[in-house]
Image (cartoon, rainbow, N blue to C red; front, side, top):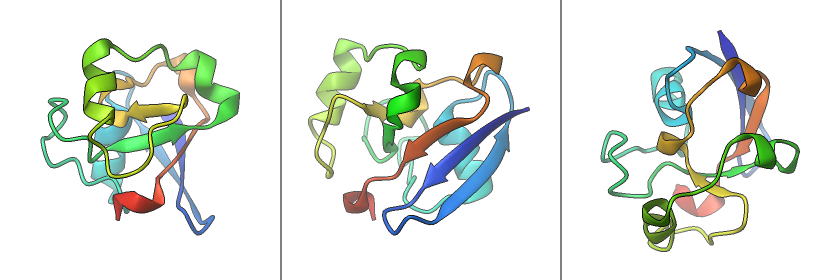
Length: 107
């Protein structure tokens, strides 16, 4: 199992255990994490799973594809250099302890 911490805009935290190979989005949906809406179910067509990867983890989650960047341009919350679609980040043992922040505008 891979632990992921989701931090809400109010600072509250929810630590969830996910399965290697699942996405950060699917892990959040399975656990009922608020703010991760995932309208498209992970097909990178809606940007409702937008998260900000914690600075300590930014280099470990990979880079955004051009398609992901295009979709993030449509997100309600501002895109930053740490923005990711959580459907595009797959859990691995190296990401155990990953922390992501749910944007306030995703509610």
